[in-house]
Image (tube, rainbow, N blue to C red):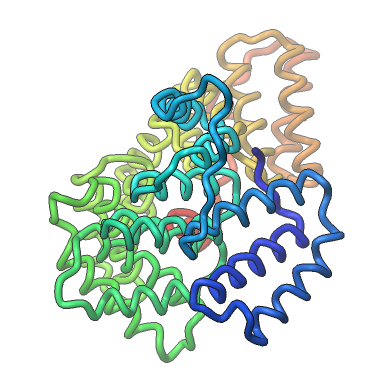
Length: 406
């Protein structure tokens, strides 16, 4: 099963989820349900046959919410034990459609199976639908992880208002697990950008309060604790408290020394302690972060200290994730410089510079380096490594921060 991003499938999913919500509330025969069915009918014929088949399956699964699910009969020779074994294998292999097909053969659905259904539909890109299954699993067996997943899916689906309303309701409970409080903090941080400017300080203050309460809850996964500390750090920055922000990032790295915490601390240190900042960003690149911009800083630092084998590795790794022309061009350029210093064949070096020029055709620094390289080809004179001009890794820092929490 593959994710669908086209407008009509997304519309149909939203309408289908709303219809099942109305049906579950006992309003199947009321005006709103009738309106939804009409809207769905108008969209239905815009879907491909495969899309129609998948939405039929999703609708069938959503009947679990109303308690109207009818199990599919077992095939000849099948047993419930055999189905369960095949289900475990299909789920592990991320064969989502096959896993859901097998679940439909089981006579009863407990919280774990509802969760598995949510995971399968989430993996396939049906984020709003996955929320329904995570919510249902939580109703069957209250679990902070199910609630946190539902919140995360709402945010990913762009339903920030609904996510914020849920977060506010959770925040008001007398007792809340650390995992859920930290997820609420992350959701609030993401909604702050959409709020009125005058309301943002209060939201950021709420984020920091929630994280200060929950960040050291050892029952929460280390990655969740670090995520909360990162958004608290950014919230402190918005509130003008850079010392508390750095303290929060330091805690995040201590709790979970992975890509996002290291990048967050690196950004905070860029204008305070640049060598330390570059070490953090280099460590994030070494850990294989899927963000593109840390590789640019790591490669630039490696050029500055003349570690050209590292430059080559960072550029190659970064290009696997980089989409922006300005970043790709710089990585190709620095890879070419490293290739010269490492004695790679001229054909390889030329190809790298050509890739860089294709991405940055008007860049003056790149043009000067290419001219120097061509002169070297003609004269075969040695070029001192310090002669290469290295442009600054000039990225939008706010955009970089957003990439860590978006």
